[in-house]
Image (tube, rainbow, N blue to C red; front, side, top):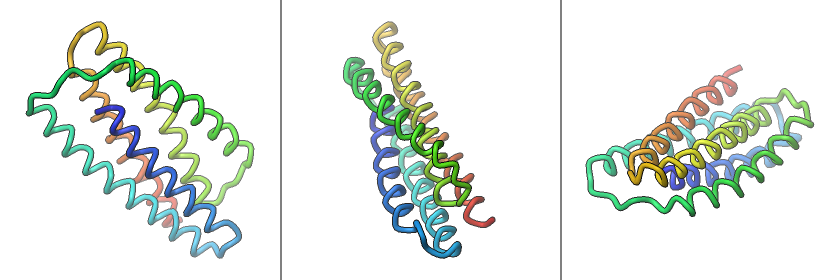
Length: 154
């Protein structure tokens, strides 16, 4: 679930990056609109994900593959760290760029958490570290969406 959550978050990030690029050079109104749209999209994904986490907690789920969790998240961590480094170098204070930085910093935290969950799955032989991490990821995404919606109002 942690990897699914991370994947959905990355999909949302890709869409938000595209929207942010579309807003470059546009009026401040469009940039704020893009930030709000990004925030609502992230919120929608977080709510869908939390419902799925609850479903998996209740149901009988197989033990997640810790190797895949750790391997994919390690690669994502490298990519997201580079993206965050690139974004912070821009020093932009515009809403659409701040939204991108929020998403990317969340991704670095999430990737690290999924790696930790994978290690815990290995040692505990339990699905629960993965499910807990999935829930945490979606809470982080929800929190980020609220921050971005606030940026869109400024």
